[in-house]
Length: 211
Image 1 (tube, helix red, strand yellow):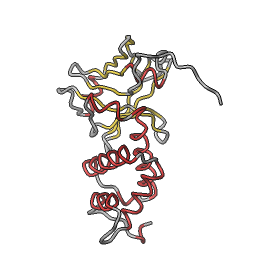
Image 2 (cartoon, one colour):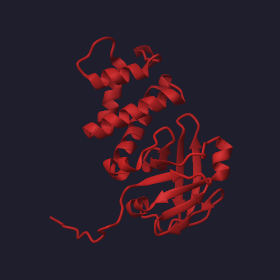
Image 3 (tube, rainbow, N blue to C red):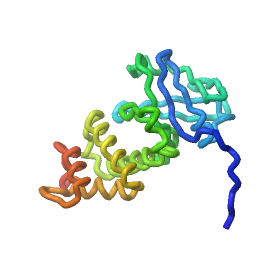
Image 4 (tube, rainbow, N blue to C red):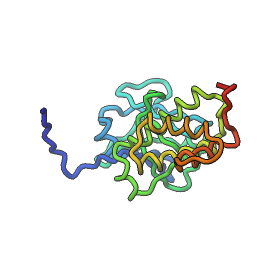
């Protein structure tokens, strides 16, 4: 066995990002600790209109389109007013989100339709469940392109999957399998979770001929 000594008592490891009313993005100290962002002060912002997800690439070197993040003991501050206004993202109300790494997107992401409260953050260490939901959904919609539900329907689906994943400690494959089971349902089922997801996949259900 290889034991590692822990010496970071009193530090935060909740990875979250906040939209502030002054048009800035606030990166938590926990995100800096989890993802080692201290030296990566240049940030490129991305936006996916269909899923209403914001993407972020942190780098130690400047590149076209990047903005500079101000680093403080409490985290980082990213000027984003122009970004918000360009995409019509509301920043009149301060909100917090889980910041997670997406292997599929190759960047950090957060979902504008999944705000969290401060007391919720400890339930989602390292945002593992958010990342799992993103990856499972990416796989599902890549295999079944006819399942495009639109941004609002996808947001409802994501919230339900996120809740199920956190309560039942589901991984990427578990979530993907649940989506597949829900897709094939036509009537009653003993799997209550699959029934809930099946209803969220309607009215656009994927037939075998579309696969």
